[in-house]
Amino acid sequence: MKGAFQKIKVENVLDIFEARGFVEQVTDRVLVSSLLKNRTTCYIGFDPTAKSFHVGSLLPIMSLVHMQRAGHRPIAVIGGGTALVGDPSGKTEMRPIMTREKINENASFLKKQLARFIEFEDEKAIMVNNADWLTGLRYIDFLRDIGRHFSVNRMLAAESYRARLETGLNFIEFNYMLLQAYDFWHLFKTYDCRLQMGGNDQWGNILAGADLTRRMEGEIIHGLTFPLLTTSSGIKMGKTHKGAIWLDSELTSPYEYYQYWINQNDEDVGRFLSLFTLLPMDEVRRLRRLKGSDIRKAKAVLAYEATKLCHGQTEADQAQNASRQLFGPDKSASSVSVPVYRTNQQRLEAGIPSYILFEDSGLCKSRGEARRLIAQGGGYLNGQKIKVFDQLIKLEDSENDSWLLRAGKKRYVKVIVG
RNA sequence: GGAGAGGUUCCCGAGUGGCCAAAGGGAGCAGACUGUAAAUCUGCCGGCUCAGCCUUCGGAGGUUCAAAUCCUCCCCUCUCCA
Image (tube, rainbow, N blue to C red; front, side, top):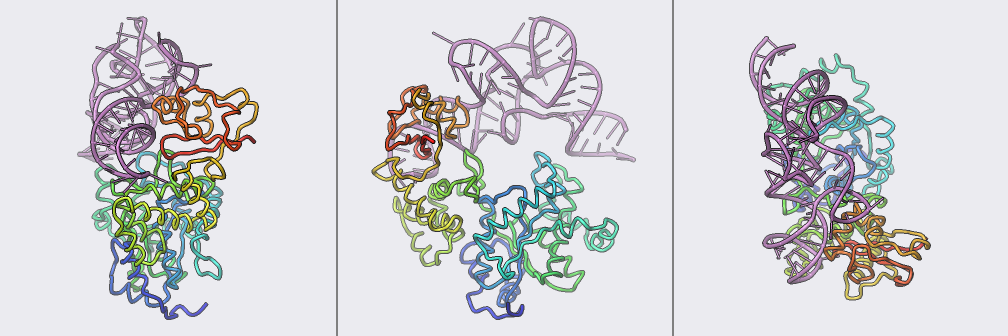
């Protein structure tokens, strides 16, 4: 590794961010731009509340990818310390406080996942857990050294707190800003980290960190926030009737992941191509110009590229093939890599009532839901509509040794014996 | 600590003794229309061995033939006062 001030030859990553729509706010456009002319260390915080990221975290992850490609050094901070306190921003219910073991376990999964996007070798990227420095803090020292730099008046004026003052705000939550500010300062001291990025809801916390560092060290460090991503219908991304879309292929198969992207709204495709793929902007603009049903081509590119980034080329190819077969003119179950459900031969010999198989295979959440689905004409076996909810699915109904179940127009499961 | 308001099915939110598995909206699912899109229209939207049965309205008891609704205690949230 070269020195910290190694010159970077590629395009300024801030320009890339702006061109691709990553930027909502920057502390100082001119200063950040010149900062990024040299090799810079930047950080983003992530919650270790699950063992996988979901697409809601994809935007920050992609920003780290661009950072690294531009020669900078990203730090992914796992919020283990903050998770130990419980997350206040989900105001409906207090999250169960997580044990350190669980957090560490999650963190190792998350690192593996992140490693698909950015390289950690030779410290080209770093992953740290803020529990390492937060849990050792001593209250009196913290108040005296850190707390004195914070004006309560100013904190209350922050947008993130102002809204919460209506509904109520507890002391832990009020302290989040201090803890996150401390993180930023700590990373500055330890890694010379000079830029923090995050969702726009983090703006206040990011500023607090930059402020703290300025007061304590006399150094100007910076923040950048991403736009809050909603689909064009105003819904937050990444939720389907089956729950979140995960980046872990165990939780969301590459096929489902592909389907998630190909089913995006027309209006979102251009934006998503620039945010969630690494295609050159010329290509993005070309795809963006497509009209009418040609937009499907852009969606296919989006789905393929996004799947490739997350799961690799092989999986992306398979997902694409499966999708083409299922939605192409020749819908067949053969050699298609859709989610598979295994059952035993005896059951099929006896015949399984459709609604039970639909529930067992995970296509429906309950048998009641399966009954309704089929009653409404949304249940199919090998492309044939199932007429009665308890129609038996038998051994002799197979096609190529499998039974292709379909719920509605898009959700498939292949049943096989085994 | 005191006074008041409130906790309802995924979310918001009606419901003050039977007509309540609980209005309405949102989200979600399906059908029609399409382009594996959106919008629109229609249906569904607690569970089950489904014309019936079972479990829900912060928790635990109680009154009643009958409770989300009334009573008691407890837990939690918010507002004002200290």
